[in-house]
View 1 (cartoon, one colour):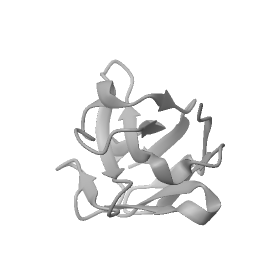
View 2 (tube, one colour):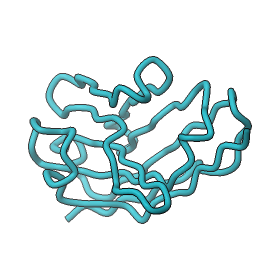
View 3 (spheres, helix red, strand yellow):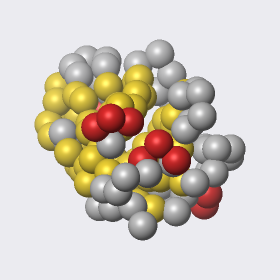
Amino acid sequence: QVQLVESGGGLAQAGGSLRLSCAASGRTFGNYAMGWFRQAPGKEREFVAAISKSRGSTYYADSVKGRFTISRDNAKNAVYVQMNTLKPEDTAVYYCAATIRDYGLGSRGGYDYWGQGTQVTVAS
């Protein structure tokens, strides 16, 4: 069992930056690939970024590529996403997720555990 708690959301201006954190419980954090997803009002939850458990390979949605950076610190049981050059369309609730798999990380159906989410609002 893994429990995930996101933090770092808030209000930012367009062009600004935010860094989201996700703290994971348990002693086997390194056994999980981690992902970030987001859900805007009236829209489905969509993939943002993921990082594998084996080589720390990273994957990004086209909409955030070049602006967002995902990273993990296995010693701290944490995963982060640095969000730069924010746009109003980045406004959403952002969720951290964990999966025992190390493939198909862009699919929300492949994740086993989810956090409660943190709100990110980008003002124009």
